[in-house]
Length: 360
Image (cartoon, rainbow, N blue to C red; front, side, top):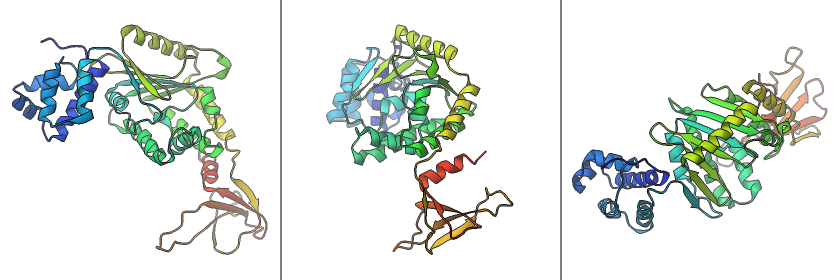
């Protein structure tokens, strides 16, 4: 039988069958032998290239001892495997792992992304992601840490030996929306600067002065692959949508071409990000206080002028009842020539943000 062009649904079916096979302790050759099929047939099934009947899927699931809701899900995918595109409705509680999206990101050779209001999940710092989830107020408190961990795990794409080629377009508003406050946003902007110089990544800003632009309709991600057609991913509060027809892909490729013509170039984008990163360090979390009592360890700051003797930095040391050392929750700065004078007190986040402005 001739192979079919894989769809999002047929690939999802193949991945579900692969996971079932692995959980059953089988490899493709063993599964083929027990089902009376060829290993190449199994391989094409798991890649989404082989059209399969519900009877064949039911036999595969019986071999792997899959029952209940997962069996029903995979049989439903079998019925819909040739339908292009996929609308997934998940309600207000997102699954901890967006398995379908992650699977496609892992297989992609190029990923192009536009975001109008928020930093792309692949570029978010942990503190930015955490602040975003908390401030939006739509995620249960006990899910926040798991969501942040899942989002950061997707960034393992950047550390692969051969990462995809990334192109990110961010509207200028993304850079000016102070998610988490100035300190968190400063960290995020400096992270964008560091990412922007990686050889496999392009980061460009769509300036606010441009007004309306080709991507005004909203955010999207276009993923391209070596072995099957491109896919566009759209996400909303309670659902996600995968698009893959030729007309849909061409429409979003056209949007990307328009953005390439109108966005700031890479150098201009880095300059704007650097300017905003510096301005965002007018940081909340810095106060002027009276001299601190005993228990503070003071050190001469390596950033001091005049031979490094004019400014001292201090923090409280100690340990808890189990002997574990306290992590400083604030950092103190004083004039070494006036040690009884007032002290600047930085919160831990404010201090981290302040240091980024001193690091070349």
